[in-house]
Length: 308
Ligand code: CP
Ligand code: NVA
Image 1 (cartoon, rainbow, N blue to C red):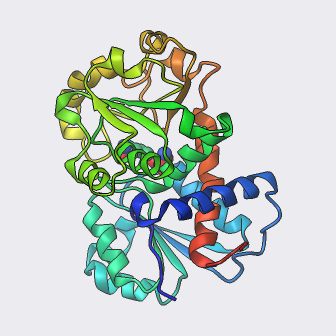
Image 2 (image 1 turned 60 degrees about the vertical axis):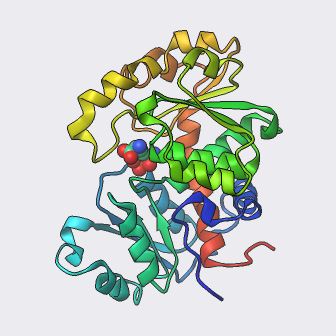
């Protein structure tokens, strides 16, 4: 069987995403059940950037499924000396899968081409597909039918988290409005993919925050300055400030929307503390759901046909 990778959400079909989310729900309900499912399997976790949630949730996921995770800080490996291809072709002789967090998306693509084992994108400049799985799982816990809700992402439309959310919502039929300044609208590659696959019907992009957030059931934001963008931080924050998730924006929905953020948050920059800490915040459920969603993803990739 050909190995599968998960570099972007759209590497999976809608049916496959559905299956992973359903398995994640099962796993969350009965966390002891699959404790030996990945016995004898190892995951290498390569990090070019810092991480709390991705690193720990993958490591705990492997441990709780009976497997093992190996953390590799990029700077302490010989990826810094050798080419990606040679290093990956060595790594895949030891492990069953590789998860990598990289600056350039092309790096994780090169890894996937070189590896004989599945490669998972643990965040690149272009995508954060594991985050999108946890996000959809979190939203589905709040709404019996997510095809009937309106989700809004406000802030940086070029953001990796936003792009993966667009792909996941399009595949699962969730209505998503991205509210972003004209300088930071979602990349044309994702918009073209939507159009080409006739998936754009429920995805819209607007610069008008008041109109965009109206009737939102859920509002999501992420940092205005992603890892690697620090040198343009000041400019980005200035342009995106009117798209901050604050109580005024929440009021404009005319509803009492759930609040989402993938974390880490920069309080009072992209989201105000009162909103982040409000009763409607499901931000820490999102963080927890990284664990359950990634367990399902690992089983899907490492034990094809698991549960069917
Ligand atoms: N949301 C997320 O990926 O968190 P970390 O950067 O801490 O892994
Ligand atoms: N967009 C953020 C997400 C962090 C989880 C970043 O890339 O830094």
